[in-house]
Image (cartoon, rainbow, N blue to C red; front, side, top):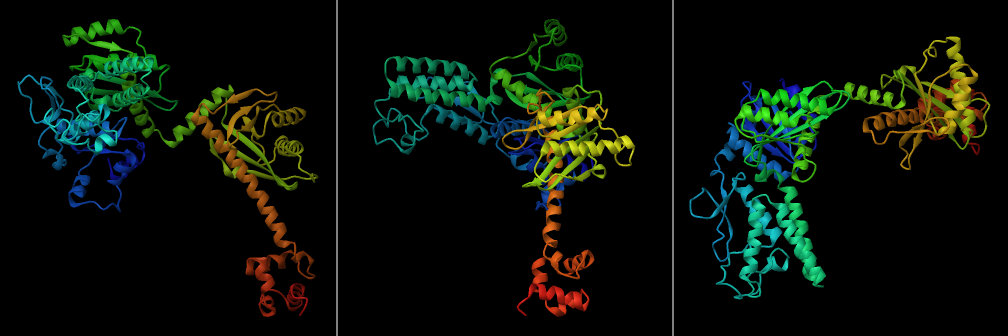
Length: 604
């Protein structure tokens, strides 16, 4: 890819946390990084003004392509970054490669007061080991998160030696520790809490949450409300921890999670690979749209896994697969071990599938062009209105100020895009007071009279009319068209309390809601805003011309040409009033200049 192509791809990334993988010209991964917001971080590499170090400039010069994986949180992105660096050993991740390996987390439950500790390797010493989770920072993050969630000690006191030696430290007063250095906290309570920590490290969040919930309800029944409130807070913390650390759950070892997304313009099939509980990589394929997600996923899963030789134990799908039992049997025979295919409907599996779907959506939207987005929205709108064609839309709006300078605008959208050369403006005739319905009848009559006459600029028949207003506006326009022998679908654009078009409405009041379909909502909103803008600008221009010329109209000998010359030279009425006789003579003849000067300076 060229540098411009890399830059364009980076600018199309989402504002989501995740990791990015830079590849060289032979496809080798040369750098892995993480980002709070992928678009901001990755696009910096391809900006001319970026203040890169010599090493980064060299690395950027070697980039031929890059890929990204969207994560659910910054924590997941950190875990994923370390896993990918360990797997690929990228050339330009020098500092991370120099890290002292990927440590494990050790807990010896045989001790009176066991602690979580970070160790470099697993030993056959009877203790429980967990991980590796990633680098040392990641492992420490896991320890700190569980410690704070369960309010375990983070100090260097030794128990039972230091029980009641001194008052509890600041951590206890800040609510980060249950004050295990006090003698009223028993060894049995500590052991029970550490068992919960081990369950969390094993990914058994629900088991811990269920136990705490039972204790909370029991305390509430016995009217021990303070204890129940403390357990309630701990339950919330456990549930939050399970959400945040989803990526490290060891229960998803050797699991593939399939995601699928499609719009009218594009579809994407994505597979997230989990090994040892860690998300290691993403595969995806962009496709034309399918009749149904179920059909597409079923077909793609079969092709993908029959061609793949891997160690997958479980496949999570975003939609049900009709013959999943038979395909399970076929894969199990091919791989020589049991393979499960599931469509999760609750728990961690659903959240994993959600993340896979997000990644599929981001890949599809990243490569979808602006033209494809417009055509997709237009196709959805055409289907919602049940029209065979919607190539040309004309939209109308009325603008006035207290009944004066009543004007109307007609905008044209061809293939979903504004066609400004066909815009028209109307100055209403014979209307002195505000009358939206009368104004709309007049402009529709004028516009389509010229259509029937075949006048240039008015001779193209629209597929639909959008009117700024409600069902009565649509009815007025339909009636006017019927009187002229013309049949064109008419829709009012109904606004919400934030002045955005929330629905289209037919004469008679039937509404077609658009707010639940973002592409259509955006398209109709653009049409309404553009039509309103065009009407307002014309109204302001008329008012401005009327107000600017009002005082000069009373000056003898100053007609339209001389007024225009004065305004062109002095730019405003204030400067004309302040002009000297000599300055006026430079623009007007002697007599006209004198008339203007005397008009504004009668005392002289």
